[in-house]
Length: 292
Length: 311
Image (cartoon, rainbow over all chains, first blue to last red):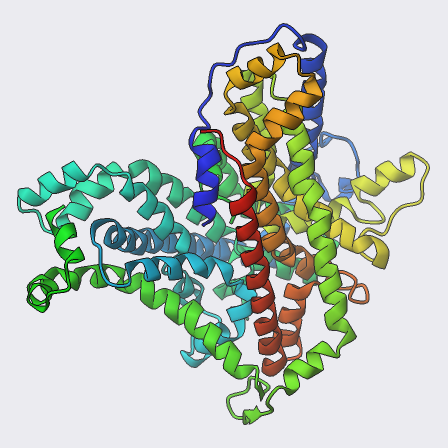
């Protein structure tokens, strides 16, 4: 639903040559730049301030200079000592990677079923998948929590992964792009005697690389940033993810701003690196598939 | 193709048996996804409905007592519930300007910028979207600190009294709204800019030839053509806006001061996990789900009727 609504305006987001009209290029575009610069400042300054604060020496935390007068890594050392942040980063990394791989896998399987066959209740199942989007997590959190408790998995990394084995986002997005796949190619593969399993992995999947890549980015980032579910389950820092680490840190030493900003920077670094390297793809994948 | 047409003609039992071989395949492919969604979403939904008629404190050892509609009656008589509902409306209404109106104005206003600088702005204004909500909360808490934060430093420098952004009951909810909006504003701007850049320039040109003023072009050409993107963002904001703020409420205000920032999602969390009352939590979950579904239904209906496409 999300995807359908948004892909319409955005499918054609590629730049298109626009004729410059005589009026309104000069002064207007200066004002346009001003607006965009202000918006950019609003968006980027907090992130910049986080990094700058984290690099200030302890006695200079409250300085308001835009550039730290001297750079120190003490805050990082402090944060590393106060919470097991490395362990938590590793946990977060494991959870994000595993969730991404599994969700892509189950998504490809399910999408393939919708794209290739027409079967009884196919529309109904498709709708049921799409409608999961309408169930706020807060509504199902108590039964989910009880289920995890019953399995004895509270405070474990495994429980963080389980509910994310499949997502409507992955299924619907992949089903959409599979539908656009030329039927003739599939037919030809079938004539060659390829079984459905092989068609999926040897014909479909390689051709969907673009969609799969942007989905992977999207799933990875949103899993990395997830807060609510880990918050429900976590008891000890060692078994949790880095977002919870920051929350715990804030509760225990809320006003140690330098180390807090250092921990926040460490928690954001992997995502920021991905963003810097793959900026175009990241923006596109978010825009193609809506807000998560 | 052949298989598709066969499967449509499944009236004859003989055919059905013969095609049964591959009729089971789609279900095998779907199984992992269906199992996950049923176990973690659909079954819990049913279970929440059942638990909403019980009183229970989540301990396996203590009994679940059937109380009928008591939980619902109690919730509806709680001032806290109505306050949270009102706050939810404030969240949604407060977010609309940040997530839709301002981005729309910016997108239309800056459509003339050259592609190169637009790409740079695009890269920058998207950053908040990928920052983790907890990190955003930590950074904003630092920026808004009444004693040493950058924002209050600026305010006192201008000669005003420092603002207690997170502890003043009148201000706190707006603080959370602006932080939530900070995450979204760049993203919305990009969506609307992309849609705006996609408008066929000959339409604008034609309107200009007809002597339409700049404002008329915006009102009569651009806005109708942007309507599906606008409606999409409005819908997202209405349905998800209050949910997005959960992390900030949880980390920054804890629902306070005096419940001033508690919205319905936070109240659910509070019922379920602070007061450990499964019945109340589930009953409010059911109320929320029905309300959410109704709003979504109306909105989808609305979008079908009012969105407008060229070709």
